[in-house]
View 1: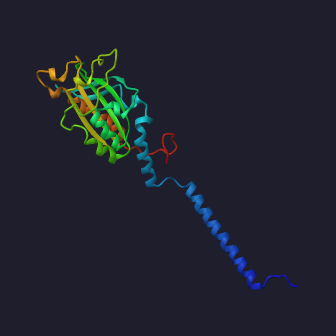
View 2 (view 1 turned 180 degrees about the vertical axis):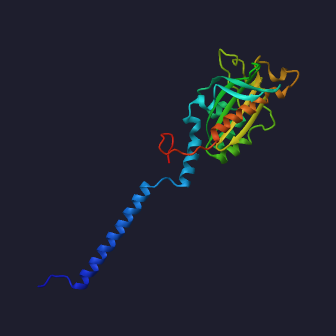
View 3 (view 1 turned 135 degrees about the vertical axis):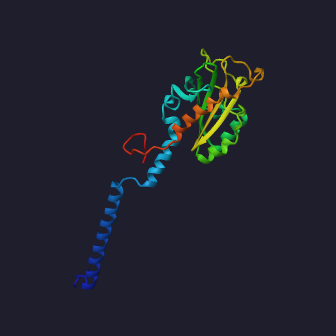
Length: 239
């Protein structure tokens, strides 16, 4: 019995084999192109946003809170606030007043890092708090929980540092506060006088002496939230 395939069948099988080979070649070429091409604009943008969102814990705290921060002096010229210390704790609930803590938790707070500074005249203390939220939407929502008229509460709790000029910087000392937002971050400040006098014991309110607190906080926020062009060869980037 002749077991050879009919001619039309052989032709169809050969054609199918050729089609499969061509398809495999095209697929392989596409896969190779995909593996060797550089990141797209959308991928670079996404990488930049991820890098910004992780700065609060990827950066050394000394980069978030420099040893000194510049500001415009009340009497003119430029001065520098000096860092006294940085807190190792990052708890959302322990860093702000209870009312604000609830709002942070609801909006997706990831952590809070704080540092205390003293002005050039060594009369005013300022605690700056960087609040890292899940995303920009959460940051915008959480911002409304804080006073935006300069009142210190509800707001950031001051960071007192034992054995320093800031050891008496407790919540009752607070006289001014601020809140700023950019991207997934809120940056809060709370300020009071070095002598530790309670706010309600101050005879004459002088809000101008605390104005520099907002200025130095905006410097911190700008550094944290300004996008940088991704470098996909560096370890800190995931493209």
